[in-house]
Amino acid sequence: MRDLLDDLDGWRAKGKRIALARVVDIEGSGPRDPGAAMAVNEDGDVIGSVSGGCVEGAVVAEALAMLNGNNTPRLVTFGYSDDEAFAVGLTCGGIIHLFIQPLTF
Image 1 (cartoon, helix red, strand yellow):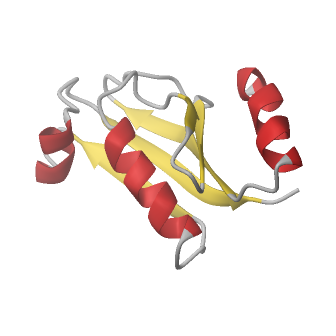
Image 2 (cartoon, helix red, strand yellow):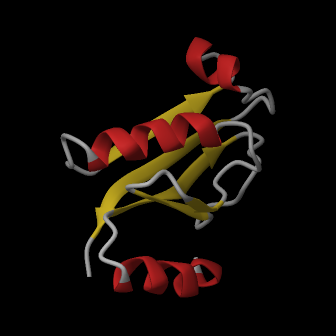
């Protein structure tokens, strides 16, 4: 998360709306440990990583939907038995739980 702070500060200074996704739990094998984070701004710019690339596209879509509509924080789960997660590439055999929320300053 600390590696995102400079970019987040720059986005904030420009008045960008931001959604933050964090790994809050993994079951079995997971690509990133709890605490891993990524942020998406309203322009679709991305910093950080929650899965090493395997579900980032789906997380960006969730974040942009949040910024452009229902901004209620939510828990999102991707797992190997989840058809959508497999389609976006989560093949590590585990399950990752992400908390996505709008970031306010």
